[in-house]
Image 1: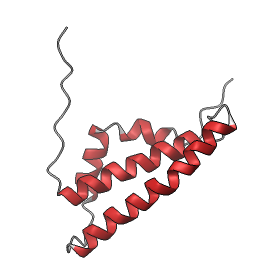
Image 2 (image 1 turned 60 degrees about the horizontal axis):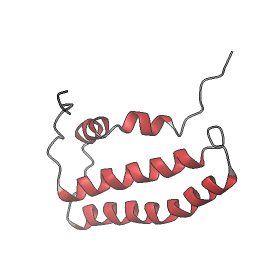
Image 3 (image 1 turned 30 degrees about the vertical axis):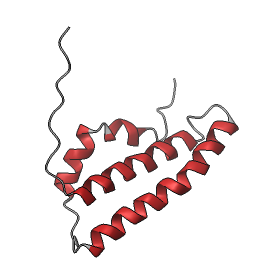
Image 4 (image 1 turned 180 degrees about the horizontal axis):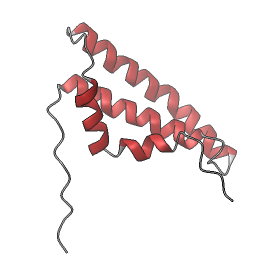
Length: 101
């Protein structure tokens, strides 16, 4: 069996990479909290507790970008990175699930 080849990540600054990582961590926690997808309050509570620290890390990553003079978010490049890192599936957990018929 051959290993799966993933597309390469676009070139990112270290701060942009941290921004993407933190953003995905926040998405993961919000997805775990989503009441339309959850099954128990304890899991949602744990995710909500983790969300606070993940959001602070996201804030810090953006602050660092700003302090370093990275004033512009290169949306197309960062969107490519999000796709490579399975961001579409992870963001989908935040949305409402399809209705069952």
